[in-house]
Amino acid sequence: MLDIVAIISAKYLFSISVLVGGAYFLLQSRPTQKRMIVLSVVSLAFVLFGIFILHQLYFNPRPFVVGSFTPLVNHVANNGFPSEHATFTALIASVMYVFNRRIGLLLFLISIIVSLGRVYAGVHHFIDIIAGILLAILMTALSQVIINKPIFKQFLK
Image (cartoon, rainbow, N blue to C red; front, side, top):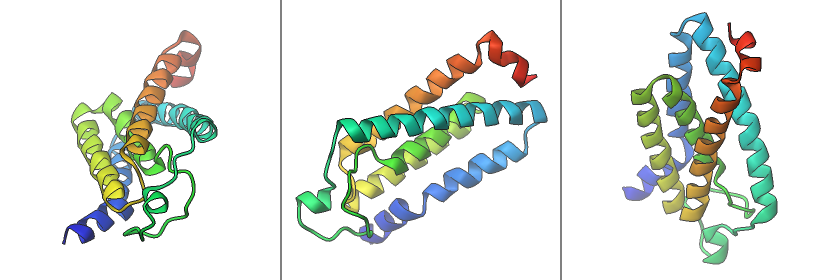
């Protein structure tokens, strides 16, 4: 039973973050939607760059490679650091947190469940998860600082 929950969490639960974030976006005013898009795009760019850099700096073989076992979900035996599932679900949660703290916290909970499912499934170590979540939070915070600069304010009117 726990295996089934882990598989669902590891493979499919992230879609809830996308649906909740998308629904919230659609219910907002145009100016708020514009701010959400700008924050999302800038944060995503920084996150993608961060993932690229971290992939170059640190190689962490996946648990099923190190432990020579079959993971609960199929996965390529590549670098697991940082976890892209953890990063992207935490990125959605971080952006949502800026606009609605309650929904953001709910999405962080989903991100943690997805991440724990991926650890249990044998495709990530905890360090991969922690790095992904921290990367998303830090890049969203950096993006928020940057888009609050006066030069960006003119685009958000």
